[in-house]
Image: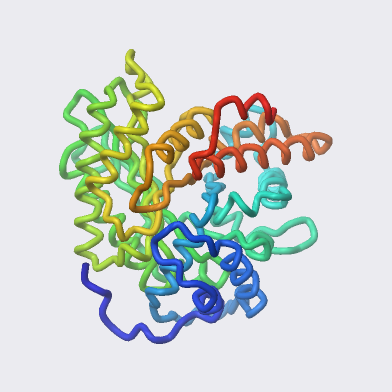
Length: 400
């Protein structure tokens, strides 16, 4: 893997504070507490100073990227994906019959971000553009609120999946135009990592095609290179969807091909593997498949696939839940970690699997906030235990 060319000597003050505390590389680190303290110290050093006139481009520092990436998955930590777009969060609110107003969206995110006790289990939170610009009731910007607790703020930067020209039924993720400038602004607003999602569907009509996989892999790689150029850790998310009737073997074959092409494109774009995170799907049968795989089969197929195609230098794997139930997503993660040592930490970057139980508890009612936060804490803790291979399904009833 070639290093990125050019001058890389000027480091960002906040991230330099993190790097000076611990060199945690790509391994499970016992220094997660130190890193969290360092990140809080970094915030005090001017992490959120915003210039509304222009953004100076910082030079890339590989050690800083490695430190941030590793801090996100250190110990029992994973990621809360709270980056739902307006239409997506509206669907969630519709379930509980809550108006999708800006204030309701802000209040809901505040409930999540202010939950006490989640610091050992959350290394980062992926925000949406609107959310990154919002603040808590007391006026504290959400990014600052998280960072003060040692939870690293991130940002979704893609513009969503659109139909791929001349490829019926397939999509390409857009958002590369103007991304360099947006990344610089997001960095000044407090984001230290980013996320881009590429969508791959499986169907019986010859989908996915090699050209669709290649197009999405290329977009992911260009995004990742732009992130690293300005000192932001890219989360690379190539998602093979659970939709469809395909079996687990078909999912493994497609996921293997996708990962192989994605990492080839990342290498072509000179992306430093040590300074990124991978957010893949689990290898799982389609939701319409009559034969669903068991927990152990999913764990073994997923780890077999990743071990073959994901370089050991990647600092961490953070799985998407992809429509699984909260309990299934936790059980699958735990089973993977119980298989033994892996080249990288195997953790979570869950949206619905962490949030769905919270929404149904909250129901948009202030009197339910305390119970909703307890629910969120429980799900964070259970997934943290799964990250460590210490989860048991009996804990679901015990923690209810």
